[in-house]
Amino acid sequence: MEETPVRPRKIIHVDMDCFYAAIEMRERPELAGQPVAVGGSQRGVLTTCNYAAREYGCRSAMPAFQALRLCPHLVLLPVRFDLYRQESARIREIFAQFTELIEPLSLDEAYLDVSHLHSEAAYIAAEVRARIRETTGLAASAGIAPNKFLAKVASDWEKPDGQYEVTPDAIPAFVEALPVEKIWGVGKRTAEKIHRLGVQTCGDLQQWSEIDLHRHFGKFGSVLYRLSRGIDERAVNPHRERKSVSNERTYRENLEHVDQGLDKLGPLLAELIEDLQKHTDRTIREGFIKLKFEDFSITSAQQPMAQVQESDFNKLLVEAWGRGDGKAVRLIGAGVRFAPEEAELQMEMDF
Image (tube, rainbow, N blue to C red; front, side):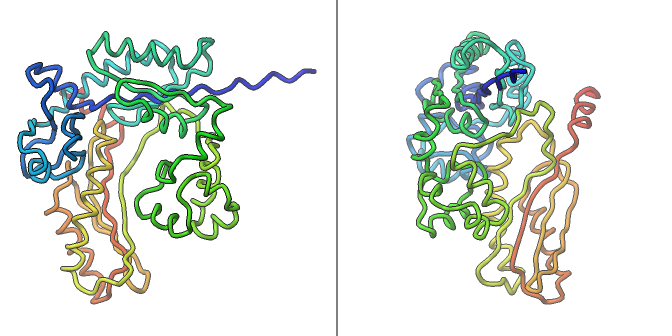
């Protein structure tokens, strides 16, 4: 009996270009050609900015006052999440015209699995982008590949308003030249650790065995081994629910006093705010602080909150620090937990 041939996967990653800023510029045509950022007051941080602002060095999660120093004529607009969610819903309706296998990552990006369709994936991506422009007046970029990792990387290749396809035959050459920073899960500190091994690209990483990578990076070593070869078997999951977002830092020297901890907390919160830009469709339910003391004991403190406020996290840090009975701290973590998506839907219905 002949085996049924395995259908090759066709994954599209759609990423809206400067989504919030693009919506604001559509609503206010007089802003055409001007550097624009969305982020509220001068005491806040930028949520996003257009390409004109990026030419001056402005970027998301940058403090607004710093952006205004780089670009004094920057047009700084308040955040209007209700409008952005409305536009995001219209875009997801377009996705649904092509496939039911849609995995939203945030208001402005999503994976689409079109493996079951007979049309070429690149043609489908072009059609999706064209309908988005016709319906909303907004531009989208897309990456097309046999898996999620490569599709997401490819969506950056022809930005703005373009698309790039990584075919199965092109995978070896494509991944070989990729900087390790492009690997899913590799942040600044992990990248520094990888660079200390003399590794700059995925091609360099391919020279390491899975055993050696596991020795240096634990379970994540296996992830590095596979992704550096362009191997990613994760399915597009329409029902994925992210429960929390957090980051943490282990310090080379233990922190002896709570004031030192408060100084270290600021950069952690800046990273947290930047990470939350990918989850603006979720409702924050609770914030928390995690501490690991010099004896490796761990404690955490949490409280209800709707947004990241430095003053609230400072209080949590002081509370958790006091439980150490004078012990030094070697790790600080900061994060938020989301309300369940069912609860968010009910909140919207109640209004």
